Image 1 (cartoon, rainbow, N blue to C red):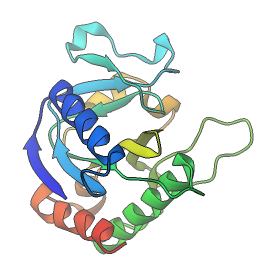
Image 2 (cartoon, rainbow, N blue to C red; image 1 turned 180 degrees about the horizontal axis):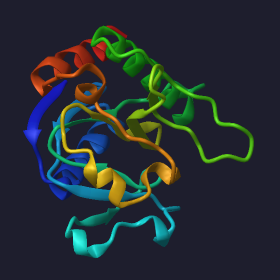
Image 3 (cartoon, rainbow, N blue to C red; image 1 turned 30 degrees about the vertical axis):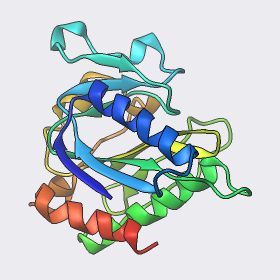
Length: 204
């Protein structure tokens, strides 16, 4: 487990790549890196141009090699990068399902009833976690695997500004309503949420 505060996205990607190589060589154990980023939009390889934000918003847009589509990162959001060796019978999608369930458990402990969703045939992939009561999306997930080791991970909105989510098409879902732990519960801080999320992964 590694815990940092605000880390520039490009610097985080460089460090994560190094950790992946170390895990591939069995020079480090499975690792969860918890941190936050300054404002940035990240896009997957399939993100349509029309989903991008207006450049007048002056928030950088960075292309990544993860799965998924557009995601926003900013202060008040807890990002978790997972550098994990998959079992020989496990694919990255299987592991994403596990990540969703762990985050559902963490949110439940924080007083937010949450759920993962199955993707209807022909629909955009419903990766992530939604609130049960309000039907809003609270966690975005985008991961990849290389030589049996995962990278990238999840973004849980804790108490940050949600407005930038409305300036682009998040997760390839034009009608999605993004939310945060603070919005759902009335009050939440990173100091409250971070140890609960960490415990949900350490317990497994």
